[in-house]
Length: 178
Figure 1 (cartoon, rainbow, N blue to C red):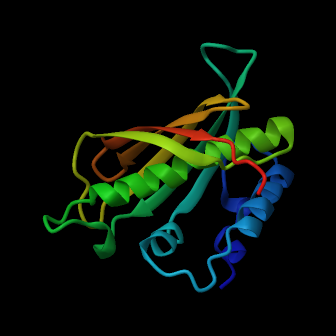
Figure 2: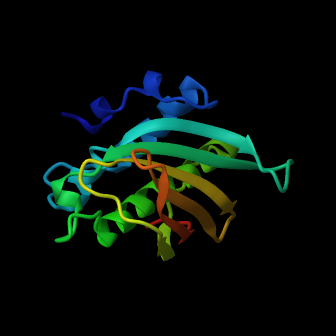
């Protein structure tokens, strides 16, 4: 199955237009070819369900916009540690991927360029365990999208137990032309 077939943009909520959603996914899947790629990232990322794509006025600075994306995934066998809880490495993967999307969305909406960037740092705090079968809700929000630094925050919530599982701040830099 082509990666584009995994996402039905008509099912994604939020205030972003259908045209902007379609443009976003054309860019995302146009550059992210996973044919022949093996490992845990494509397998887990393929199960993430897009729930929301929004552009909102920043509360602290109403003249500026922030990007917001929301995803859901269920904790499965390949995502847990020996104790049966969501593995910290899997949490980091989810935060890495899901914190990048609001940055790219805001960039596309404001400058016409979806910038996915290259990671500089990621800081994660683990708050509570999520166990096999828990439904997770992952919320990513931009902090700053500039010409030199891109940053966002991400929270993983257990929709099953209604508690915060992990939170992170991800700092990236725009990629340079090769």
